[in-house]
Length: 219
Image 1 (cartoon, helix red, strand yellow):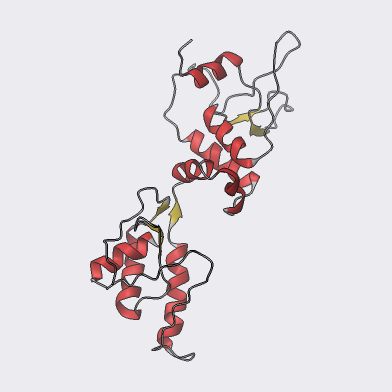
Image 2 (spheres, rainbow, N blue to C red; image 1 turned 135 degrees about the vertical axis):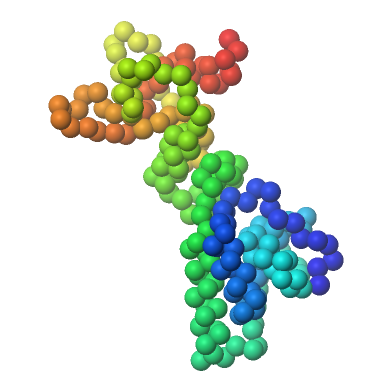
């Protein structure tokens, strides 16, 4: 039995709607506990927050197995045989419960940016990180705009008369942070042929706007 109460992760970026919670609840009630959950040294859930919530509702006792991560801990269900219908149902329900949950993209982007060098090991490539950051930026509160401006703005143009610097990012995490910090969104190419539209990341931004975002407007 767990000596201390296990706490849900306040930074959990996985969302569980009512249907997802019901699938987990029914699986635990009818099929029993399957895979284990993961907690940290402070007894806070790292993985399995949805399962923890429903197990507590059902009053299922929790046994803690301590580990330093150097071993893979397998849960052996001695009551399940290869041909047992319950075993087959549990295998499906376990995977289906994962399908029915989803990421909170804003929270996920923030969490990835806090992973440092390990961010490259969490399973998202640069294109996915960029898409995520743009999605988060598009969900930010609307700012006052010119009523005549297009719904999707045109990209800024870099002209010969402008002073400029070039920033480059050699890792996906810094790029994700830059997209969020500078509020870089999807824009339209003003040079596209009439009748055609091209969209992409707005890679040219006004220097004054960048300074305001960095300083919080204190200049």
